Image (cartoon, rainbow, N blue to C red; front, side, top):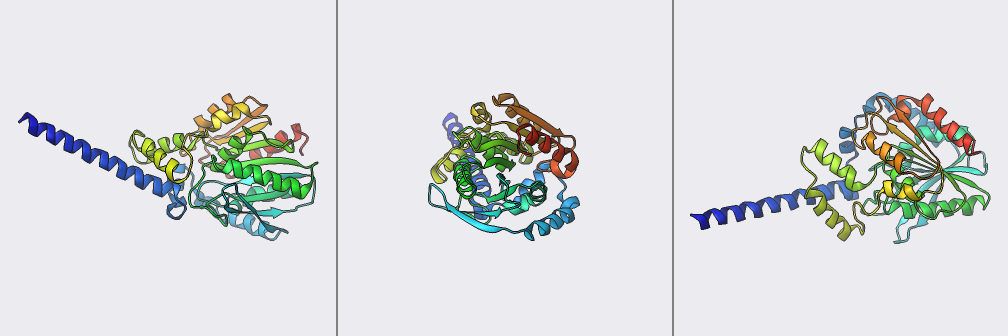
Length: 316
């Protein structure tokens, strides 16, 4: 009888382990692989009703597309062809490099902010991050790989604009994490500021939150298994780069923006990032705003905060 119970327990444990690996594998392929990612899944857990903004976004996107622009391509360190859209604007010495959110692309996320910046007289480089839009890649970088690509885009803008240019990095969600993680690197002196909108701390922590909120299950051991899969396939760990640690090394001012009702990257992450940042910093929390909704929820307050932040850095 005891031996039979032991075999049953061992069999149940094996079945449980197999189920955990199966779920982790499904989770990895649904979230990390370009061909399987569906942005609607992120929207479902984000706390944002995008339907109310569609007409406004489309109108601004059409305006942006009518502005002079060109496609720009560079090669990543691991030999991917990366794409961005360049807007020469009024040809000033100031430019914003824009990094979009997960499973999106540059001109989708930055249509409204592109108009805002172009009307301020900035040049723009709107990036398609690796494995997004017209950029090559199979696996998403979640900021860890993208921050290296960001340095290459910075160098490309310096090459185009000259050594006296002044650059701002502005990212949304995964793009915000990219900008913050890049801030921890030894950036060229032409980078003068970073604006991070609803960034997460790390892929590990935001996925743990999603597992809890969307799937109603603990992160362990799914995240640990998915982390091993990511290391083997994509070449980095889910917590290898943590924006909270990177901003401790930031050498440029940072404006943190977050929606108070963000259900994807909890607003608590913004407070953690702000507290950890060692460079001059500012924080704007928009009441009632879900994930990536801050600009649309209160565009006037958002624009006022960005203008004031840039003015204090002599970038207006």
